[in-house]
Length: 131
Image 1 (tube, helix red, strand yellow):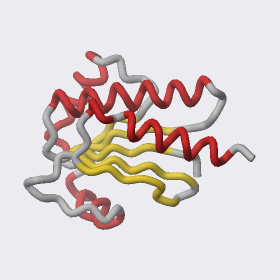
Image 2 (cartoon, helix red, strand yellow):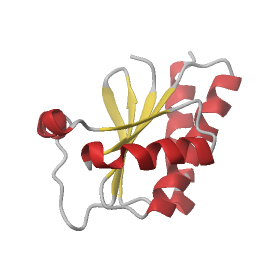
Image 3 (tube, one colour):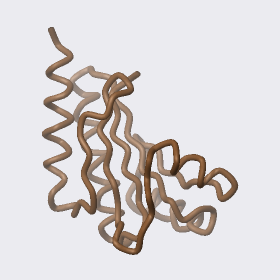
């Protein structure tokens, strides 16, 4: 499995969610510039009601190198169960860093200003691949 970062947005502010998406795109571009493979996803848990908002976000922030998506209403519970995500009024976001289908790092309620934590764990993971 190609290394990846998944950011699940639940009750986060639009500003923080947009900033996380921009920072994730910058990270993925940086990794790919080093000729490494990497994927980035930002996934909204609110379902189809956020569709227009996500289209506007991708256009306004020029998101092109990561996937921006939402959980379809009919499959929402299955995906939340698969990723062991329990939604609550206190959950703003969850960030998962994966390598070879294994969770390497997890951050809960991450402020975009602290995204360096994600970038450092992702870079460390990639350097570990080079042997």
